Image (cartoon, rainbow, N blue to C red; front, side, top):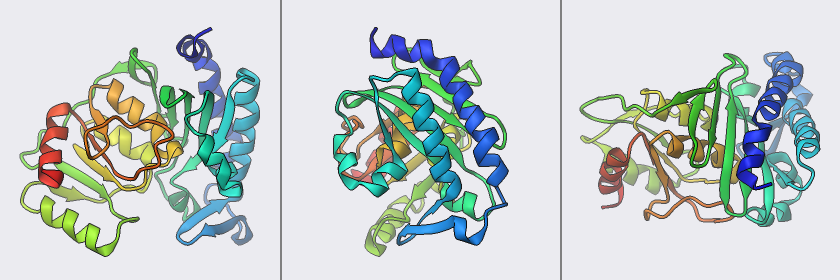
Length: 270
């Protein structure tokens, strides 16, 4: 069975798994974490007991659905950095057990659960669940994007100055200043939600037009980039090349349409 047909066959099971993990692990701990259940795994990066429990449950569940696929989880990579070097090799499940952990740990939205199925460097399918609203965004390569299983096409805000959310948190002060200066007068800058599982839907649902990301870790972007691309938007590296798993470069530009991507690329990199 091909990876794509596998993704289609397993869609209902993966969706149910995400919803069960949200109901059993993520939501019961929301706004109820004890101090000792929140840790800083590296400067500025939090992990909670719920992240680890969510990843454990997802790993077991996804492995049982397709034992031949290796599992790459954010927290597993934090524990063993060598695991990240295997991304882009063979059939893989890629997990972000709680995206937006900083928000989750602070007891505020947004946050989400993200899973992608990849074959080599290419994402075949992706799922992004908002546990609080139940919104499920899903995509399969070549078959489109879906919102709660209804087909979805990306729409722009229609603003004269396109609405841009810029993820500058991992940029240097100089990089932030340069980006902001280039956007001035051309784009309307709005806060980033610090949650890719929320930002990619915003780019699809007419809330934002453009996003710039510096970090491009696979669990943050595999599902979302596929979702936006399949919805008719565009996600590419800043040099215009495709986003592929296993590529360790930084920098990603996302937009609600190819025309908006071209416009943003000219503003920032032209």
